[in-house]
Image (cartoon, rainbow, N blue to C red):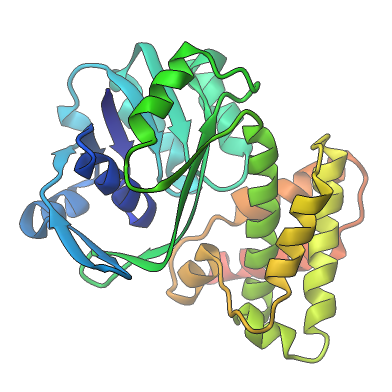
Length: 304
């Protein structure tokens, strides 16, 4: 299977490297600066097991040739419009596009551009970041990759994707209810991002602060109400596990949006929090805590 990995940051770099190491034909679509960095130093993975370096196949938008069987999109959500332009020449009649982005807005955006039959569901669970020299740093052993048809019908095309991905040295989950998985990932990610960005700290610091637990539970409840109103068939056991994970004061957690914010980078405010507020408004839901988070993030973006 010919695979194009759109992005070679922490997510794309890690999972693309594992696919390449498993013998898959993987090309990384990257910008000039990342292209030069990877050409010079290779793709470096720092994992709990040690350091690995590989020489990846690289391409830039101007040099893409031929169609790909699978395009995995791993950029930040605010870069999606440009990436759609970049990957367009690589999309052929049989191409499938698997976005691994935060939130859900990107699915409709990709479907409108390339067609509903082209887009499949995907998400990952990994604690990873880029180091100062562009190395991919996997902070914990967690490395799960979920994928499946958005309508739950995993036909022969999806079976082929699974055959390519399942032996790539990561924990793969071929899901027949990927939409539930996506909603639950958004619940976890948006709650974590909201409380960390608003309080400017990790969950351990928040939960051991006066009113911190009430803040986390309040944000979680508002987001869950939006997700439920949108028609998600929330699974009680899964949502309970998410709240239990977030509420453990012994485990300090932060979100990628919080880490980006503390470094002065652009953040996915509209995609992670703003879109939830738009959906809440559609159902006339009161979400004062989410509104406070959104204002906080907007001010940050104005001050960058």
